[in-house]
Length: 385
Image (cartoon, rainbow, N blue to C red; front, side):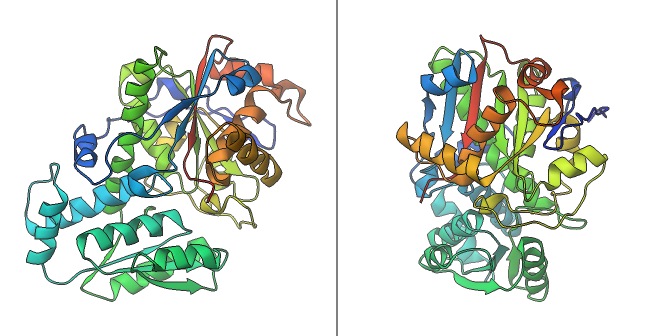
């Protein structure tokens, strides 16, 4: 992967790397979509065109990738979890790493010593792991930070998982889950963030997300649309954004696409680190964007974000809530994390940034290569309920 210099706009909510589209990396494995095609409830999630949004953003075409029904679950997380669990089982069973059916994965489970899958989650990742464990007959234990509501805990428990709510934030809950898993020979930590000595499973999770971007490519072609000028991606610890960078910077055809990362203004660990030139851990506040309320970026994702992410912007809870309502009126069920991408596109492409006249929306559009003929894709990563 080639290094890239950075430039930082002085606006407090805005970071831009003017050389991101020159950065390159290896593409994700090509067979991941074949694996997902063999799962129950296969098929791409909708790519919904919204002319009203295109007109508001001043572009030719705008699409929302609606992940509210992914593999029968209300968020995209099942893509990464299912693929990572498949790779764990195949590795332990000494089976080839290529695509496997549910029946083949169940056969691996039956042939192996007892396993327990463990993770910390702020909701959707834990739900996806619990569903995968139920599908394959593997016990699952999920740890939730205290900010996660009782409804989310009950939803995960309804999948048959053992759920424990910790009096801690997300980062401390992740550390606790890792400690629990390391103390049990039968436990496998399936976490969607990485740290030194724990990289392989998070890498498989990121690889699993690549199916989403392959679908977008095919759906845009079917709609007669060009490759997107801009794709907006919610951040969290940065794993989905890492998958976006790997997809669009892994092939020459994708390098004209600008990638915009989106964070809550109360949990902007990626933007803070990018501005500082090194990964940072920050204290986070409360936000309705619970799935993005993360204080430390994944070290596995960091080189991709540092090199291949064009820009990062923060959004407020009111802006995200407005976007939830607006998308709902347009027929897209989107929660605060997914709708944050619409809020970010509005903030980036149509709104002046207070305190920095140089960073008005005309300036940002030029930096990102978004003009009146552009196609914009927003990733709505979760449903409204």
